[in-house]
Length: 195
Image (cartoon, rainbow, N blue to C red; front, side, top):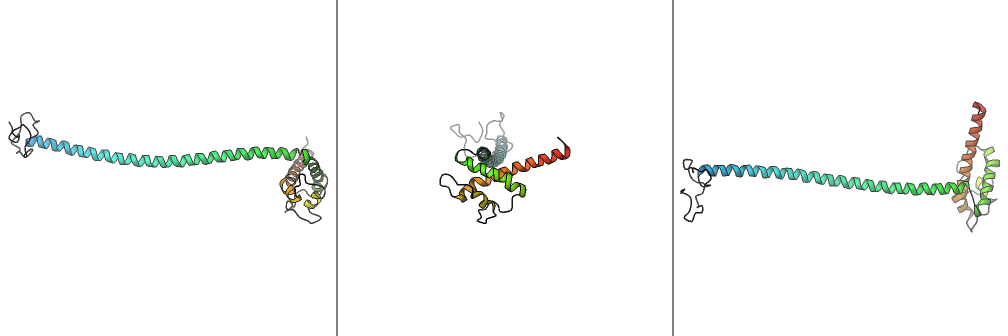
């Protein structure tokens, strides 16, 4: 029986304090100096493994944190782009409806639309190929486009002349001018280069 083992078979206070000469034959008594050194080596190795695992864990936690931040940024960007896309679709649909309303004035707006188209084609465009600066602002000057057009138009549904001019008539004038410019450019090109 080894020297350091207590009476009950347990290990006494002097465990691992045996000299290098005191060795057990089986190599697993955990009481002699050789066994103690072997255990100490195993403990040191396990400590290094724990430190390495902790370092790897810290690196992994940092990477996970960085990935979470990146995910939040990408998610926020995705949400912003979705909102932008929805707004563009709404604007596009609204613009399409507005273009249709401008091209095809109907109901109460039809007479006013016909007056604007006729004035643009027969009066304004032959004399001025480009809309003058500030033409879209309501102006009481007798020679202003606003006065010439609104003198001939009565806004429907109790709208004021300024509201009707700003919300609808300016769009009609823009559309008609663009159409007349395209037609004039096509005529010139056909004259110069032939059809």
